[in-house]
Image (cartoon, rainbow, N blue to C red; front, side, top):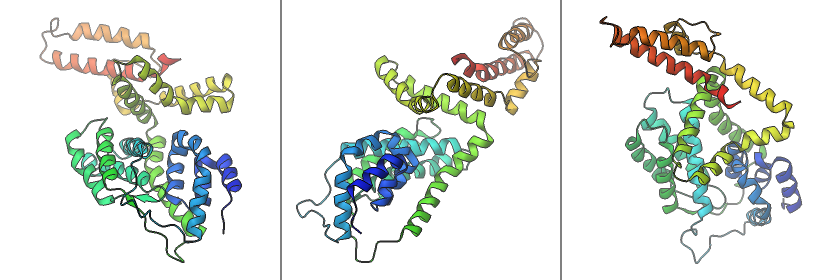
Length: 339
């Protein structure tokens, strides 16, 4: 069936961030990428307003079995946009793995590099192009041990994988007659892929909400701190990272709704973890203790157990325990400082 530009634009406007127009045009890899990144983090969806006619033309050529690889090109031309997308999506997949799967054995050696490689290859496979999956994953597995245990390890792993994928890019072979599958099996495969991606982070969010929010906060802070020498760039990145929150406030009208979301976040963060409960016990505090009470008890206990003032053999160990407990509780109170 011949594809319509008007239908493609209508689907782009209604469900573009979910990849409905790509699903209509038979671009399943692109549709999956948009489902998992909400339209390429919004930027890809906006950019497609001028790309849809080309997508429709390409889909109609496939329908008529007219598409052929360019005779004058052995490999596709280098695309800076595709390369940037590979790096960003690789980091995104790696960050999701860090949040939801970091408790697995051999995480930094196997799980993380495979997750980053999957993200890079998904972008490589968009449209008429593809890349060598085996070489991309090999680059990830080789790079990962170098940055073992680092929170920022998805960045170098994604860069290495993106360079490898770019060096081994190629055109997909033209479709053969009868190779087009029905919508049902395509949706089934896309649903399985979406479930595999979202299940780990969904489990982590619902069963460990506080730790997840803290990790996201620390990861964003670590990323922004890398650009301390360029304040303007740091501000731009911070604005982009907070874009989903700003969009949410805009959709809900801001004002009262914005304050309501802040209150919800506060309620979620009031749930103590086991480590925080232990810290409360160390400082002899109740669960409802304020920041002032925490600081007061810390000063009193630190003074009493300081090795310079307490000759006990356990003084140094107890002093360090008090210090750690105070830092844990300060961390718990930190989200309230941004009201």
